[in-house]
Structure formats: structure tokens, C-alpha cells
Length: 219
Image (cartoon, rainbow, N blue to C red; front, side, top):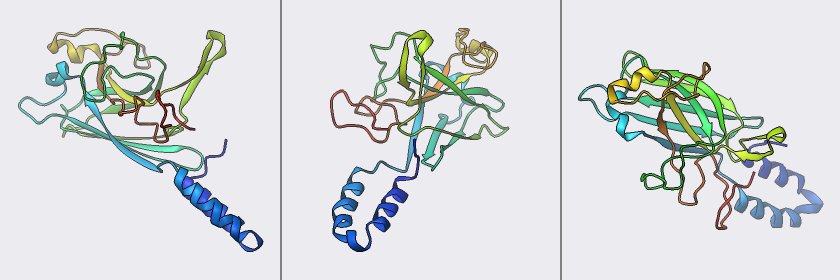
């Protein structure tokens, strides 16, 4: 339940151990330090490669999307920055259970078209320079999940981040008119950018994985 930053937890443990418990603090504090998860992480999102011409300016550089997530006491903060996109593009940001790409960028043969559990997080619109930035505050690192007992859906993590074209019309010049439910009207386009799993198979919002195979995230 508590979401004190890990660095602060170590400080509290050290203070509590002063005095009669000095020896105990010597034993406990190194153990805490060795088990801390990262308090922040930065990662890239990657394009849906066949749609690059619908994402970038004609003759321009490849668009980029980079997220930085910082752990907080009550919730976490994600800052997402987009650059080198076409001006005026609208997107819808989600955290999702699965990515269609493997860690090396090749298509995941086990991806069957379903991103799994998905949470709508924010809208994004690129400005006249083709850039955008958005900030969200919610539970993100290591603990983001959803569940639904009515559907027999057990607690399920959404460790991937992606954004979808807000309108199917934006991808028509690229020969794609697929409609997906990834906006408020449930009439969005296809995925534009999404994260890849790390070497352990988990999405980048898990920064405290186990060393087991398969890995899972320690909340």
C-alpha cells in the first residue's frame, strides 16, 4: 500500500536504528540498498514501421518518442516527448499488457493481434513543429495493474506504453483504414508507437524484476 520512494525508505530505516539498535542498522541498511528498485527510468517507444510515412514529414527525419517515469510517494509521473512528427496529428496514449514487437524489434510471433488489458491515459496532439509533450500522474512503476472479478480477470499488469492514431483517416494514405477502440469514441486508428519488452520479457514499466525465468515484477 505504501509508496514512499525507495531512497526515503532507506533513510527512515537508518534513523529508526540509531542508538540501541546501531548494530541492527548496520545489518539492515545494506540489505535495503541492495534490494532497491530504480526511482526513475527513461525508455523509447518505437514506430509501427509500415506507417512511418503517415507519421513523419515528407523527407524529414524519423519521429521519436521518449518517456521518463519518476517514482513518487503516492503515484508516479511520466513525461512523454514526441519529436519530428507531422504537425497536427492526434494520438491516444495507453498502457497495455502486450507489445507486438520483441526486444530486438522483430515481430513477436506469439502476438495474436490483442494488446491485452489496456488503460486510456491521455490525448496527444503534435504542434506546428511536429513536437508534443504530455505528463501523466498515476501508479506506473512495478505496480500498474487492473482486474475484473466479474470476467474472471485476475490482477493483470500493463507494463507497456503505446499511442494510437486518433483517427483511421490519418493512415489511409498508407493503405490502412482499420478501426480500433483506442480512443474515447472507440473509433481510433491503429497503433503508431509502442514500447518493446526488455531482455527479461517484461515491459519497461517494470523496473524491479525477479531473476527467475520467466521473470515477474516485484511490486
